[in-house]
Image (tube, rainbow, N blue to C red; front, top):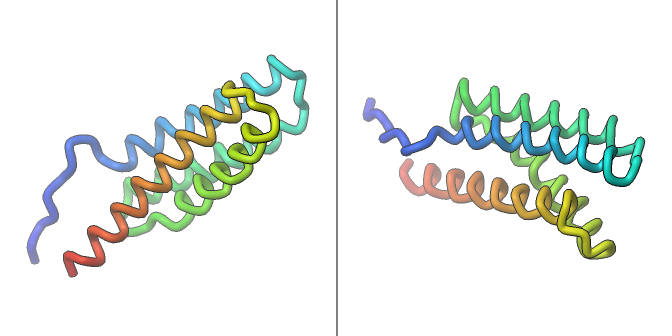
Length: 115
């Protein structure tokens, strides 16, 4: 069995940082706008992102929860940014979520072409 070369920074480290950023977006949303719905929504998506990062740390092929969480956040926060024009937190979370989706998709396609 051939061992896959390890990347410079493991993917699950990006996932853990992303989960922390989602949590901070929840806090910023509550402090700046007093948005109470951002609290449970932020906790839910932070939990999904954290679970996805944990699953990635166990098996790099297990990306589905993380991909679903970051893809959903990219869509929701992208629409919020489009309608409000406010970069913090909607534009920031949308942009980073889109980067995570892109990174995960590249990972998926590079693994499928190696097999």
